[in-house]
Amino acid sequence: MLSRREFLRHSSLLALAPTIPGFLAHTARAAAPQRDARVLVVIELGGGNDGINTVVPYRDEGYAKHRKALRLPAERILKINDHVGLNPSMGDAHKLLESGRLAIVQGVSYPNPSRSHFDSMAIWHSARLDAEERNSLGWLGRGLDGGPKLPKGAPAAMLIGCGQPPVALRGRRSVASAMERIEEFAITAGADPRSALPKTEFPDDLRAFVQRSMLDAYTTADRLVEIAGAKAVDGRYPAGDLASRLRLIARLLKAGFGSRVFYTQQSGYDTHSGQLSTHAGLLFELSSALRAFLDDLAAAGLADRVAVLCFSEFGRRVAENGSQGTDHGTAGPVLLAGTGVKPGLVGTTPSLLDLEAGDLKVGLDFRRVYATVLEDWLGLPSQAALAGAFERLPLFRGA
Image (tube, rainbow, N blue to C red):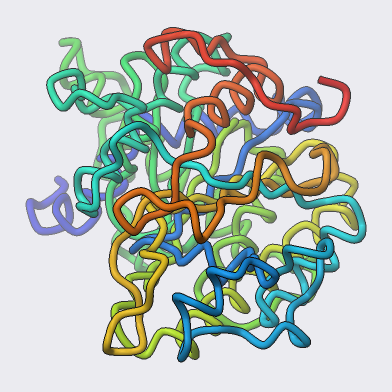
């Protein structure tokens, strides 16, 4: 008999049973068609990214006026045009831009932006401005609800990282699951309780469901351990947590996994003090991991299937504070990467002289980006997901 201790020790597998096991069981059958389905990878930049020192308006007179300690020298900026360039630490992102694989949407936020991490992230996740309309469902979950069903048990979306799937992935019908490391699913030798289960199915529905779920969960563990033990044909990735998570996403894609959306996070962008070096390190990690991921997919023949969306809950104030950092602001850039994007700048570069209460004016509503990603990339209806119709942007080739 399976003891309570053993049951609790492997409860994470049982908890995932309704979502992951069937999905892996269908991998072999679904591999061929799923390799043709488009996939979205979302990278959440947690803390509020300083868009001004990411996409730098180095020729704007307000840049020198408002930033002394945090101003980046014009000669070091990775030029996009005669007025705007990328942070010097984003050399790999600049190479993506030059190779036609990076689009930069400027001045993105929403009406009356909140400077609260919690409230603003909730708005970005749910695509609902009114707190009363946020009901623990997210824009991607709702969008996936409106799409075709995946093979039975397949998670439509996966968080690659620790914790529960974010609100953005939660839908009424679509399933989201989470994974940090494949190796976490390994079963200790001698601890497998399958031999203790009866050979025939329980007669009542509830116990039969639990039995099937447990068997599926352990089958899933076997499959994940098999993948983890197999020699991976990976590209060259830099060190760091973000690169490791993107490498795992690439491995899942190469294995033919059927999820339409993969979600991961990079934290640390709440740079109230000592911003210059901290921010440069974060952007270097993001830029190098992103390029390695896209190059890896290109080598595997999967680049045309995948687009990457990078966003943060808000930008930073235009003026630096007294601690050589910046405080919570409003608008900021959204990055889209992949061979399917239309490269270059999208939208008007925000002025650092024409401000609203010391903050950048909002140029584009983020829901226009979402509508474009849902409709033009994933082929999903956007109106129900976003509670309205939003004009799409020229972000993808052939759209």
